[in-house]
Image (cartoon, rainbow, N blue to C red; front, side, top):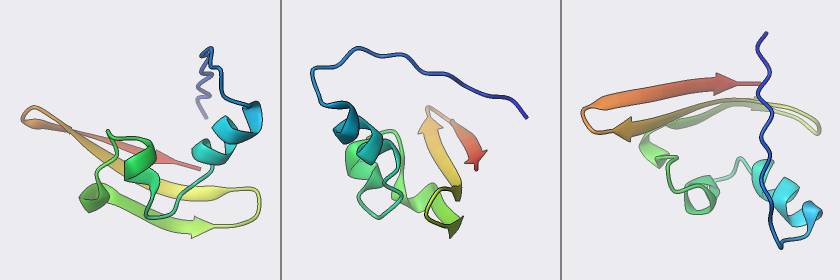
Length: 68
């Protein structure tokens, strides 16, 4: 399974950044503007994981991502 590592500098507290990354509620599209609610589906979630599909329209093309 591929792993993606993301590195970004921020003045925000690490806890706040991780809380946003782990938020799979209806607020996700407000936190991450590229996530479109119409193409967002939580298949399952637990205390330490979530199975999620996110779709983003980029011009005439849709980019789909399913992550666990």
